[in-house]
Image 1 (cartoon, rainbow, N blue to C red):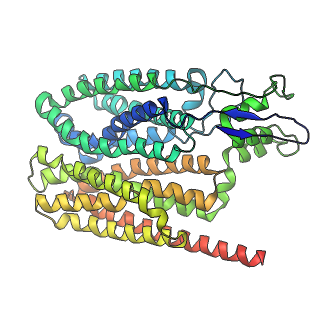
Image 2 (tube, rainbow, N blue to C red):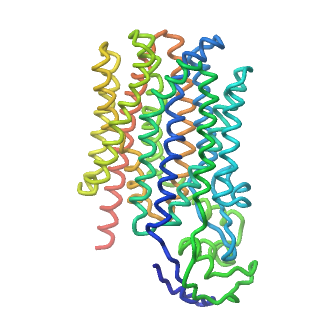
Length: 483
């Protein structure tokens, strides 16, 4: 139960209550989100398993086949920017406002449950269409771009639904949802390889289209949260659209109420530009720390997603390892990721804050060394060990950079910051995947992808080190000014 009395010089708002379940049906929503995480991240990690079969059928090279995962990344990044709740509506309606490019018009009218179901049907039909004979551009559209858009919006819907059901246990609930990413990475590659060997790659896509349809069942669990103990004046409205301020807080919290007032305050938002700066947090683009944060994250994503996507083709073409054994390598990396996420969740907070970024810099150095070591390994057993080690080192980074965002920029701008980083990171993965494929085609050596990943993690280390120095200097200056 949460209680707040909102007061203002000009506007009166009575005490309102919202009941956070922190359990009950919320755990069903978490379990559904875990299942969707398996589907979404399993799809992302399984692209390389299809590379050689697609290259053989269409007669294309690595640069061209990399466009498939590139299309997925860029459309996922654009459509799936972090949810920012800035809604103002009546109590019995659910209207969402997103910073993404696709979500606003759709989710505003559909809501969480319907949106999840509709996009589940769309992505399933699209994947089935991709399995049918046709030109290569149809495959990129139906198995790259459209799934990227659908999964981008659906992932945000999952986060929104989980946040609605939890407050005190919100961190635990979200971590359980994120474990679906590791489970999907572990299951997807060997499973897709079995499907390809049994039914060819087009038959595998037909079966996967049925798996995508499980998003409909996930959406069916997202029933609206029951509100209770409403103590507010239903006639309490403002001159702008007669919006109930108590309802804004009741559904979306104090930050949304603050944003609403800012957006409709003649004193602070007299121009469209001022509104845009406030709503989109454009002041972030004036901070050097913003660019350093984006740089180390995008280099991490390029190393983990773009470079490592060539692991299966490398094992098959360069080391003559069977495709079934090669498809297990990303699964071993996922085992390391799972262990890394659990260790970071339990132990990272015990590290003093001033030492957290240097520790992550050291992790990036180790990751760069492991990537550089991969081409020198000719044994399948050694490859397994290095894949597990890579997962152990960088598997928990996704959760850590959220912590650093909160420390460096504050909670108020976190949604916008996360959204901008998503777009930049996934666009960079798109460009990097195609660029690495082009390098591999020119040199004829797939191992160059791992040297590129090593360089990416080296750049991540440098960017994070300078961010640490910049923030340390800022804190020191602030402390001196206060004294």
